[in-house]
Length: 210
Image (cartoon, rainbow, N blue to C red):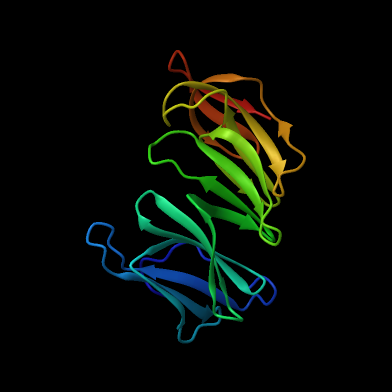
């Protein structure tokens, strides 16, 4: 496969092809493009499915006959698009938003911020376009199967700074939200489906299991 590839997805209903992207776009020079390739998992030659000029594709996901793309012309200017593999048409879905993970018909999206602060995390139904807001101020999330684990802060803070937060779990469609921890104060470090790691106000590493 090519170098400079990003997160890609298989044909979920066929499990025989994979899509990936090669980016040559330069934000500063405003030159280059992004090409979406398709290749069989058994090997063979890759074919170009779509070329987007003077922009960078930062994520790609397939569901049904559509590719869901995050397209960026500037470093902090992401727009969600769909590309129909049937009609070959591109359609804009939402500005200032990026798809970061997905499971079947539901995607995890972030409303971008131009600064390194907590962000809004949502789930989106790719068929209906319905969004469910999970956290207004989030610093980290993790999808495990059909679940999403995420932090939810009491206020807007700079990433890597001390804050008060809880860890929650929800179904990928945004339902069944459950708070897994009491309020924790410190600097978030890492999380998985069983525990969260953070540094408390005394600089001591803490691991809380749930």
